[in-house]
Image (cartoon, rainbow, N blue to C red; front, side):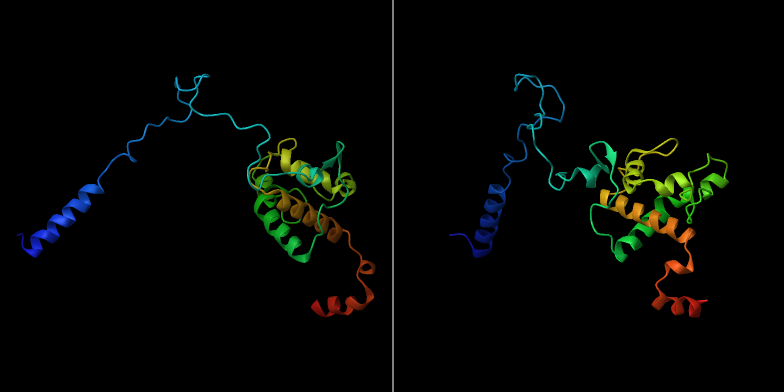
Length: 191
């Protein structure tokens, strides 16, 4: 009979030998987009089933994801804008927009001061009257020398940036009469 140590070693070796099967590691497989004769069309990758939508990418609300309804720019935000939304919009604006448009939105950002093409000022009469959907559309698709930011800025953040642009426009032309009477003393003490 084998000593207990030898029996333990033999048992351990047999368990390890059983676990060394390579069946799962050596499966037949195809490289993506490589040719194959397995499928009738000669492709190894199967086409996406028509109507399939990736999780989190169902875009039912056209206005929210295009900034347009029936081909016209929307005039209202597709969701209520809160103070937190404005703060997020300001942060995204400062990151993505201010290098060209400046932090005040006058179109004289650092990129422009370094010799690149003049960016639009948000304080022009045309852009003050533009519907909010226009800003969303320009951020999404680009305009003139401005590239599309659709791949860099999420749709809801584009709306938040548009809301912050409205804040810049309103603050540039604000009068003391625009401030509610009960909040004016706070402004005077802040100076």
